[in-house]
Image (cartoon, rainbow, N blue to C red; front, side, top):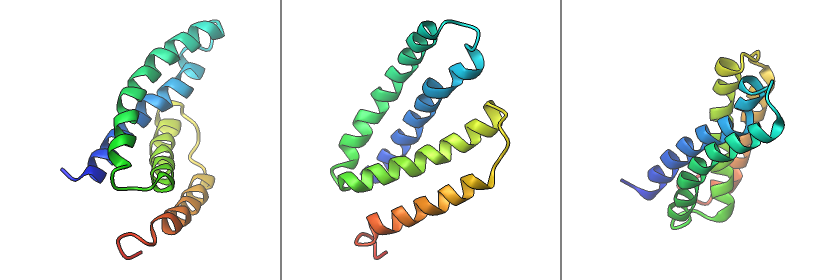
Length: 117
């Protein structure tokens, strides 16, 4: 499998863990002390790092640091929006579309020298 696809897959999986580590405690542990939420979140984030570190190492063989960062941000928004709507029951906002369009601009500028963009 091409390294870029491996990177994207690992980053998608790591972002699921990251999003839950960062935000799920707001819903599921809201009645617990913050220290409990932090310790559980750190436990979840451990699995994020087990995926994210190899993803960045593999990706860096073919992408620049800036390209990796922009790719990460696109994936983060792509994971966060469904999490926000379906898990946290937040309303779907048009602001997500505008943020996504801004990220498309970032993708264009970071990748325009690659793949003929």
